Structure formats: structure tokens, C-alpha cells
Picture 1 (cartoon, rainbow, N blue to C red):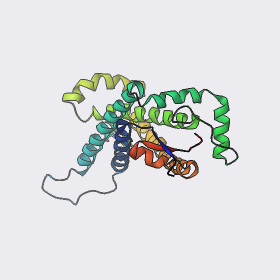
Picture 2 (cartoon, rainbow, N blue to C red):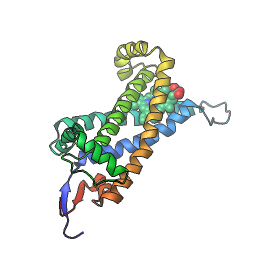
Picture 3 (cartoon, protein in one colour):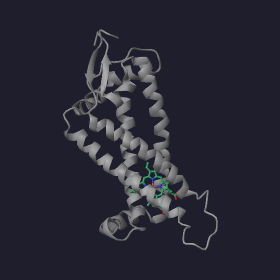
Picture 4 (cartoon, rainbow, N blue to C red):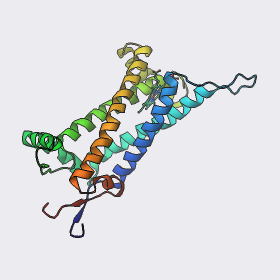
Length: 223
Ligand code: HEM
């Protein structure tokens, strides 16, 4: 390990937005399941305290706006940040069929890892691209649902824009359904992502799990 060189792969902005989004997705899934199926209700009381559903929705929205903010900032970094150049370069590997084949062989344990120019292999580009599609879809449908509960401020400002999206999506019931299905898409991505991160860390021996915390990977001497 001593003769290994470090290589700076992920900026602090990228790492912060990664973990903020991970926590937000966890919180949104927990509160989202509650909103979809109210599995617990407070005991009956004369006092005006029976607002569990509204509280769950409030926390859902807090983390929802956090997710939206972190995603917008991450997209900004992807386009403009100097360290994120390696992410952008991944598209060159994505267009190379030889790298596709070599990468699939590597995952099937029948070939060596291809030498990449960027930080992501073509399969990662597809997986992360799909995740962004789902996060944008769940955010837009979430905002349509939001403007129906909060009519002042941002809710009032977005109301007319969101109403047209609602009509395009076939009404509020379909918006809710699309929001829910997008959640399942994200829930399929998460365990595959964690499995692949562990796989790459064990097989690549470059400390790739460490890189999303420290920003650095340990390059093998021959690289
Ligand atoms: C990973 C991200 C998210 C997940 C997993 C998620 C999950 C869910 C689920 C499962 C529901 C219940 C839908 C149903 O009735 O079947 C829901 C409702 C809702 N979500 Fe999300 N959501 C996410 C992001 C967002 C965002 C970004 C916003 C808006 C900023 C948002 C706003 C809402 C609202 C307003 C409701 C309706 C609450 C109600 O019925 O009063 N969600 N969400």
C-alpha cells in the first residue's frame, strides 16, 4: 500500500451532496411510506393534537426540498466544477463499445477492468443517469402534490406551473401514482448501488468506498 499514489477524484461538494441526498432519500422513503399508507394514528383526544399525518408531510417536505436543493447544486457542479471534469470525461468511455464489453466481462469475473479516462464506467453512467431521471421525476411530482397543501409563498408562486404539469400527467391521482412508482425505481437503485460500491472496493483494491468520504482513491503503481 505504501508505494501507491493517491488521486483526487471527488470534490467536497460532490461528497456532501452524496451524503445529504442519501439521508434525504432514507427520510423521504420512511415518511413517504407513511403518507401512502397511514399505518399508525394517534389515540383519540379532545385536544387539537391529532396532526401526525401533517407532521409526517412536513418532514417529508423538509427532506424533499433538501433533496431538490442538493440535486440542483450537484448538477451545477457536474457542469462547472473543475474536479467534476473527470465525471464529464466518463461520457467518452460511455461512447466506446470496447469499454462496454470489457466492463461487462469484468463484472462477470471473466476479464480485467478496462482502463477508464473518467471516474465512471459506462454501466455506472446508465445507472446514475437513470437515478437522475427518477429524482427529477419524483421532485416534479412532489412539487405538484406540494402546491395542493401549501397555497401561500412558494406554493402560490408554483401553483399555476404545477397545475399544467398535473394536467399533462392525467390528474392528481396519476401524479401521486407516478410519485410512488418513482420511489420504487429509486429503491431498486439503492441496494444495487451499495452492492456495486462494495464489489468495486473489494475487487478494485483502490479504496473506492473511502473515496466518497475522503475524495481520494489509491491508484495501483502500474496505473
Ligand atoms: C426520494 C424521494 C421521495 C420519495 C421516496 C417519496 C415518497 C413518497 C410517497 C411514497 C408518497 C405517498 C404517495 C402515495 O400516496 O402513494 C409521497 C407523497 C408526497 N410527497 Fe414524496 N417522495 C420523495 C420526494 C418528494 C419531494 C422532492 C417532494 C416535494 C418537494 C415530495 C412531496 C410529496 C407530497 C407533497 C406528498 C403528498 C403528501 C400528502 O398526501 O399529503 N416528495 N412521497
